[in-house]
Length: 205
Image (cartoon, rainbow, N blue to C red):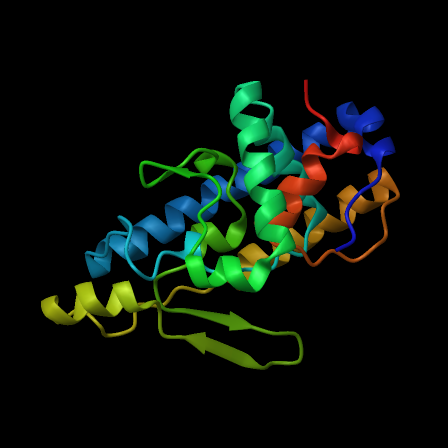
């Protein structure tokens, strides 16, 4: 895990405009996803295949700092409860996978839903991604999608191309890294991001 140093807090005012642009991009993602999911009549309302119970790695400084902004909206006692749970999950990742830890869920709803990373927004429906060099990747969607849509006979692929969103994310990420001077790679789970954000370097009062 390699996450940002304390000095980023001192230049928060410089990167907040980029997080506002990220918020707008997430809005575009939400609208595009909702439009296609609506054609399938697919609704993501929680299930055994819930992506909150799956270990995803996140690779952008943007999503990390946006999650930190979300944590600022929570009460102090709630944040510290999340921190303790995240410490436990990070220390025993394999065991936590087995138990199915949903760190930010309360009553089957994400407490930081507005601040969730890109993969949380786009998971579920079939999609395609055009990689540099012309390689095409297609994903058929999650189990919940097939369980719902097979019954309705709505499994024919409706084009949902993630590529433009990934490209815009990459552009914003490059701008953010130029602004902050942060050059390290990031590969962290939500639990690891939460721990780092609430360690001494990112204690949020």
